[in-house]
Amino acid sequence: MKATVITIGDEILIGQIVDTNTASISRKLNAIGITIAEKTSIGDEAQAIKDCVARAMRESKVIIMTGGLGPTKDDITKTTLAEIFNSKLVYNEQEGEHIRQLLARRNIPFTELNRGQALVPECCTVLHNAHGTAPGMWFDTPEGNIIISLPGVPFEMEHLMEDIVIPQLKERLLLQSIVHKTLITRGIPESILAERIERWEEALPHYLHLAYLPAPNIVRLRLSAYNIDGEEAERTIVAEFDKLREIIGDNIVGWEGATMESLIHDIFTRRKLTLAVAESCTGGSIASKFTAMAGASAYFLAGVVSYANSAKSDIIGVNADDIARYGAVSESVARQMAEGVRRISGADYAIATTGIAGPTGGSEAKPVGTVWMAIATPHGTIATMRNCGTDRSQIISRASAYAIEMLYDEVKNM
Image 1 (cartoon, rainbow, N blue to C red):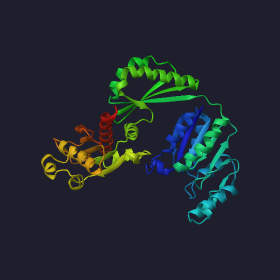
Image 2: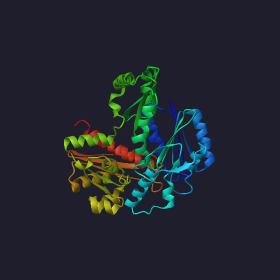
Image 3: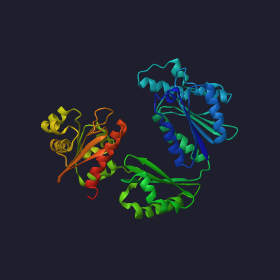
Image 4: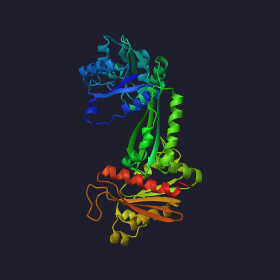
């Protein structure tokens, strides 16, 4: 069973917003056995929508569209769909009242533009949007296709997919299983990893497909099985990954969803340890990774973004003479940052980073991408220097990953 996902909006085409809807929809469809034939982004133009829908109907059973359902004149998805199905727009009383009440709670007047959002093609099944003012729409075509139009606001789309669309698709379609399982590895580059597991990969059953998904200092290995009994595929994939553990066991972090910070989160929560961070070049990236996880308040005590040298000295207690002598990007400063934030917070462990994120500020001795990182522990402090690339966002991402991995290596056997 195939699906096409269409996102509509000029703002997507010009890069004004990042389209997250296609990824979310694709994951949800894949989980119930629907493969994605195509993902397409188009502008707010009626003929483009008509042409895209016509092409999608030839390729896919299911077409899911997002965007263009707002109250303004540039939102033309609904009227275009009405034209495609030669259907008139009718006022849906239930949706109209919902919109009125929703706006009243926000102290927004119910205008003719808002009233227009309750107009829907007569031939569609209305999908009630409990979290917004734009209802979704479900169309069954004479050719047997299913066309679903959803609002482009991500959280509204998410609720409609979870609460209505996915259950309805599972009920109405005969779907075959698609099984994906992903193992996370670390500390081994993709090319070297591929060489080490080549024989294992070549011996995989023919219906299993391996994908390499690299990220900073980790590589995800995903095994996928299509059109096979789900339980059998799950057992086979687990068995194959068990064989892989015999080859690269020391490099395996865990299953999909496992991250260095989540593993540390579990260890610190279980052992009742505490953590603080002092960041310069990473600008709070490390702290945000921990505090994004529910329950981080049990162990995460403090994060200091000591970007200026004065902040390193005045807040954390780094010796100003050492900054002048060795430079802010140095082993001495990284160690003092980690030890200082550990001391002032009372944490058991601390992470520190100081580096040159660029694009300027580098030198021959310390080029852009040079980052010193340190871990202060109850037993002493360790520090290391890594070159984290040349692009600013890449440097921040890699430095954060390397520093968190350093902490993991210190506590993983607890």
